[in-house]
Image (cartoon, rainbow, N blue to C red; front, side, top):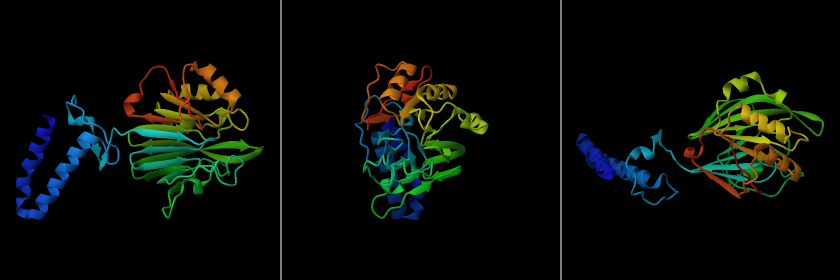
Length: 279
């Protein structure tokens, strides 16, 4: 029935385009077909079987040419290196440089590269570049908008191997999912007051937990709780730190996954959710 209503409403407008001739009509027919595809499949390149229980086209919201309600896929490559993909958009965060001791040869193409710290463990743009396409680089405080990716960076600090570095904490919005990425934060005191006022219940917070050059698992959990995050993902961990993190969060039943697939509806209020990623 919803499909019929959609077709009827679209065809009804064709009368307004008759005066522009066949070309205008053809363009509008293409728009009709596009709406039908979005209704049934969510987005180009990600097929979904038609849902017979679908009662409203509101299931898919289109805004500024973006088809929402798509899956976000998060993949972890060690240290603080993540690939976040939603539809055709690929964001790489803290890719590991080939000059790093942690380099693991992971490589893929991306639209946006976000780096928190100018250190080989976190600034390997080449690891997220493929072919002739250069990704847009975000590497410091400020506000950025790249397609459907919105980023705000806040100044903090980090100490790696007894050397001080600038660390940028990012609030990232990819379509309808809000992310907080702490980077190699070395102390809770490094969190600025401005950041605390800006963060409002992020859907996901990425926290370092190794306790050597970064905050430890206990501090990471406290920060995640203080920001009322809905989901926490630990990074830069070893056997001991992940064991402590699991104990602190009471997530003994959570099994590590190769990839994490999420939608906005997966984030609910109440107790914080823990997600563990293998690499």
